[in-house]
Length: 309
Image (cartoon, rainbow, N blue to C red; front, side, top):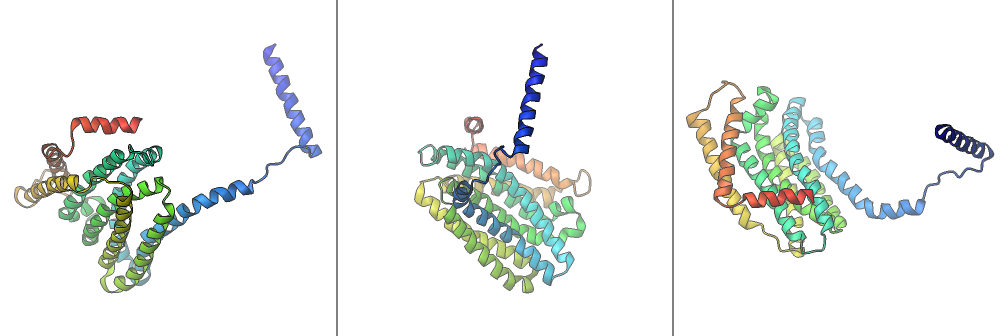
């Protein structure tokens, strides 16, 4: 009986809706223009920042395709693709920390959260930067093939861009969370303008290496402005973990050099051998972090718990 009643109610509501549509009495959805304008006032700096960012990351490739050959574009594209993948790793953590920045913005709790994010970004980016410098040819060969090995030079340069970008992601997410999106828009606009001008000047003479140098210089501009602005807001810890992470990375780099040129690990006698060097030296880097007290088990647990909260 209940099922029959429910069916009858549904049919009655459906018939009522049909009659209202036919008679024109049903209320039509309307666009809330005032709501749209209000949200647009807050969102346009983000939209323009994303536009400038897309220009920043793509203008060099477009310009190379116009004045150089497809092979040069391919060499540069593989470097940019791999570095973009590395940046994605930092960006994944940025999503979590941005939520925490927003939750505790303008509160004292944001300082330790910021320090953890900054340390995490440096923990990931420094060994990748130093290890990639020495293993750039091997990594390019492994991922893209030996035909792209000439792109190793631009890849090595772009690794420094990755290092800068990793730290800038921390600063920029903090500024966005503290309603400084218009400041970030100005910074990104300036760096994008410089990037366009320098690419036009450097690429005709230096090719993909000039494009990589331009990208680094443009990101240095971002770093200068965002670092200075964040420093005005909070007193964060930067150089203390930086020096210890740098020391751990240098030790790791030393062992990479030993394994590459002296011990010469050869398990497969092909490009996959670089994975063993990365694995062994990665473990050595992790040991150095504990020895230099950069990280601890307690801190790791606290960081994981902060993700869950």
